Image (cartoon, rainbow, N blue to C red):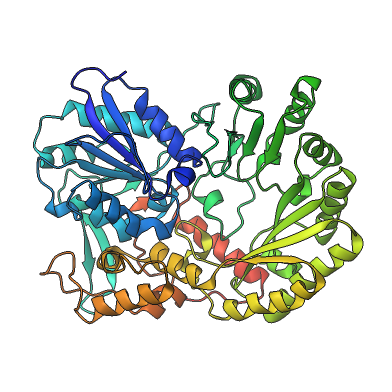
Length: 537
């Protein structure tokens, strides 16, 4: 229970309760804050929330998808909080945010936040709250300067972008000598990871207890934010982390979800499977997130089938072995076929595969190879239902492909896959090319996109709405962050589709991820060399 005078806090999620409460990240942040007696935390979703605070002192948002940016503004407006950080005074709450989108590149949304938390919340959140409470009665400017000294805490208003006369970003620099020049992402290295704190039938995945088995991924596919941004690869202790977490959840539900970018690469995963194979778990439904195809075994398929799963999910990225070399996907066609056989032999009825279109150096022949692989799988493992989820490549900050643009031909190649696979009974689930374009716009932009995000409100559910908002800002028909700031965003095509020079100053240059820029440049060069394509820039 909150103690008298506890800090009045709102933790928001930019979607409905059903979606938000399914987010393990949101659950963990809420539980971390709610366990503190010196905080009085209320939850807020787009469709409902806990009874609100009259005058909140702290407003937080968990952001896990680029396209949720405009929803933040709606939530702030509902709470009567000024949208722009520079408009807030001593009586307004500190607005903070976290999650993978903001950790990767907070700059497009930076003018709306007072504070951005970069990295894992296990240590970062307590340090942030402690620092805030020690200056609770201080003027706003003093609180923000104190918070900027906490490792992993980024205060955007204390940094300013510097541009060339042509509008090229030259640097993002602290305004005062006492403010750190760079902010480093924080990494949790404990032997326990996260698990559900709320189990409800109202969640998008009803009544499921989610347990994080591993964080990050050792494979380092060159496009992958979930791998590069969250390094190093960490696994929860079996005896001290995973088993106690599973036991706790199964007291409340019979549905268990094992999560992680590379669950089956946990060094004791086989032991976890054997433990879950006990008779006392009969009636428990177990599902796993996407697994590395090369680690699929008959034991895994049999256990999942026995525990109520119907399908297995693997990421292949491409049916072309050349493209898999380009993206560093260490996977052979033989291993993909073996995974399909093991899935069927183990009693599963479906195999879900994930791939991409528009990857750097990709040619139409590579897309044909993906179609041919799926058709060959269908022939080789009859009776196993196949589906292919396919997305367009989107460049992400802190990955080797951050310099590569979205390729317009990806849209045509998604249609080619549909033409080849749908008549053959293979379920194709393409992600919208248009949404990929907007993701790239947000993932690669700097602060000059903030007015576009504000102008896109109410029409942000379509590519046309975003383009209209962008044109309005370029034409001067939408207000800039600061009317005195005359530097406009670069051309849309350059942000979304441009292949950038490695000499270019990136919007996230002042934010240090797990790997230095030199390592990312080397990985990019290795990837392009694997495709026999010279690097751009």
